[in-house]
Amino acid sequence: MFSRAYKMVVTVPPLLWVTIFLLVPYLLMFCYSFWTVSASQTIVHSWTFDNYKDLLQKPVYWQTLLRSMWVAARVMLFSLALGYPLAYFLSFYAGARKDWLYQMVIIPLWVSYLVRAYAWKTILGSDGVLNTLLQYVHVTHHPLDFLLYSPFAVVLTLTHIYTPFTFLPIYAALEHIPRNLVEASHDLGATPAQTFWKVIFPLSIPGVLAGATFAFVLSLGDFLAPSLLGGPSGIMISNIVVSLFGAAYNWPLGAAISLAMLVLVVSLLVVSERLEKKWSFS
Amino acid sequence: MELLVSGGSNPVSRSGWLGVHVVAVFGFLYLPIVILVLYSFNGQGVGGFPPRNLTLDWYRILFADSAIWDSVFNSLEVALAAMLIALIFGIPAALALDRAQFPGKALFRRLVLLPLILPGIITGLSLLMLFNFAGKHLDLLTIILGHGTALISVATTEVFAGLQKLDRAQEEASLDLGANYWQTFWRITLPNLKLSIIGAALLIFTLSMDEIAVSFFLIGRENTLPLEIWGRLRRGITPEINAVSTIIFLFSLAAIVVWYRLRTSAESRQDS
Image (cartoon, rainbow over all chains, first blue to last red; front, side, top):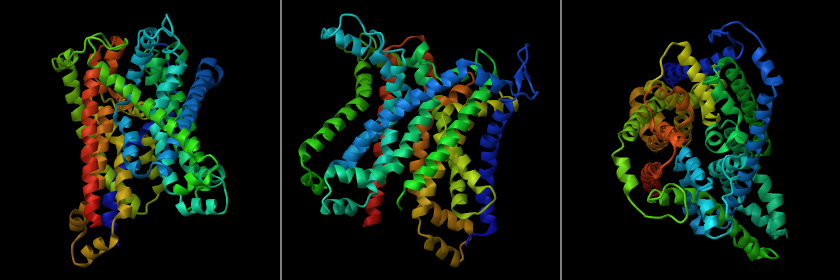
């Protein structure tokens, strides 16, 4: 029903914009990752695999990448462990308070990411709220200094940030489960545990996958929480990239690492999308 | 779900433990926010239990702090401009995905939505390389372009969802009765998408005000608010940061309430 001209008008401008500001930059990143930096600190446009060799051969890069994945995996698991029961409670037990509680989960998302990371810093620091509280009630007499500037602080903060994001798709999936399926399971004599594991949980898997992917991918690329709360032992791969684009001035190597991250992230998205389709029942 | 509660062998403790878990999760989600607001009134710095010498001094210092207010105005400028870009390109993108067939449509859809799920560092760095390659020096405009581009995804997602609920017959009727495409767009399509567009605009505005990972790489000499805060966090922290964060939080809350009212009143009008 729409004319050719109409379709052109709605298609061409966004297509052009997205090409210039998304596609071309990704392609540039790809090109940069094969270039090098000369001794005089200029970028040489000659093509080489050296950056990728560095990435695979120098332990600092791949070890940090693995460590970042381990941090991201923990954030993902904790967010699921916190978010799933929350979503389950809201969907099946909250009754009339459901909408109100839902808004309560969303509200923390409106507090700036940076501000929440900062708030955890003021809680976990050696003269922070938690340590002074513990000393005030005489649980300890010296501040516990492992709380801040550690991978623990990074995992805690990122879990705090991504739990509501993990909650959202799980809640949406649970809300879509036809309630008569649950009733049928009961009528046929299943216990609540059996109903949960055989009916509810399998139907919520697409939401779990979406939430898990979100938490993993966004934690993996984070550089703000580690540089604010991580200390030397909490450095993540994006912190290395930031320094390569700043003081260390090696854009090509930074581009190679970013591109490796991009490929990893996009493959995860594709796999998770496939799995979600496979598990969805509609 | 009375059936679930009454059917189990030990149902009360089952939902009881779940209740404890839910309370604990809410405690975890709200603890930093409560601490943040509480310590914005603390006379003795950002930590330290119990809070002492409650005061409004940090708010006084904040209101006299011109660097913060400059960054607030920069952020407002960026957010407004980014919102316009995202809507001007995001709404047609949603229409295109809904109504047009063209080569590369699947790739286009993925590209548009990618910044939503990609870590900000990748979007920021790839744009930094573009501006560097094009010889564009970094200023607020580069941040505007960055936010606008990244947030097209939000406008497209929201408007596309709105289009799925749109009654096609109205547009067909308008075209059959002799209105041209332009008139139909302004008088039928756009008014029907009003809620999706306002929702997208509010979301884009708030996300842009808060954005830091993309801005981090595209910043020139003028700071946005999150980058101004970031700079201060590295120099040593005072409850002034808590005070400015508390004020922004209150504004965001007000935005949610406005949006929620708008939506519920529109939904009740549709229902009646």
